[in-house]
Length: 179
Ligand code: IMP
Ligand code: MG
Image (cartoon, rainbow, N blue to C red; front, side, top):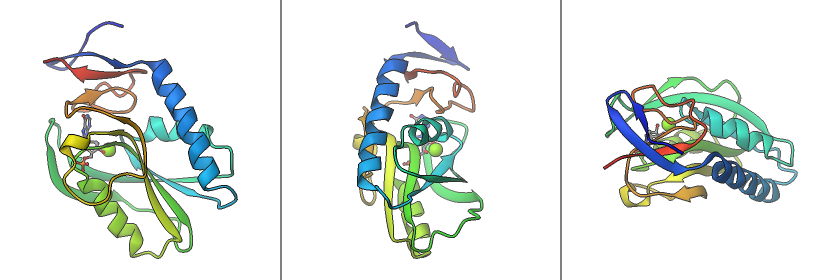
């Protein structure tokens, strides 16, 4: 794999398409076992998690529903603002449901913390969080994600749904900012 440019920055290959796909299959198996017969409700956090959620849903071996919400915490840059705003409403009731929040990446943890609170108030049977990537060194608040694909260093990444100022989402592999 080659270095790539997204806007003004250079990125180097970090996780290949094969590594990503193998991990998603493994996560799907695990989550299927844990929620067997429970009709879990995936809540995909737009925009970044759309690609991971699509693959994870297809890796599920037990009936699973999916809904989409949009939140924002990052602006156009590379620093988490920590301000979470919900932008798009959830139409399905989560009451009594086993909610699985599907996130592309957990960085400071502020987004998932905000989401856990938001859904807890709506009386689900359970709430778990799946973060495909987890920047453990950057994590400052709340409970760690229940399912993690890869723990990664605290460096900016793009690809597989993740963007840098809205570009790079289409990449099949994940790339890390070159330092
Ligand atoms: P947190 O609230 O700080 O945990 O931020 C989580 C959100 O920040 C994720 O849903 C991503 O949208 C975004 N984010 C965090 N790190 C990165 C990164 O390295 N690349 C792209 N987006 C990121
Ligand atoms: Mg996101």
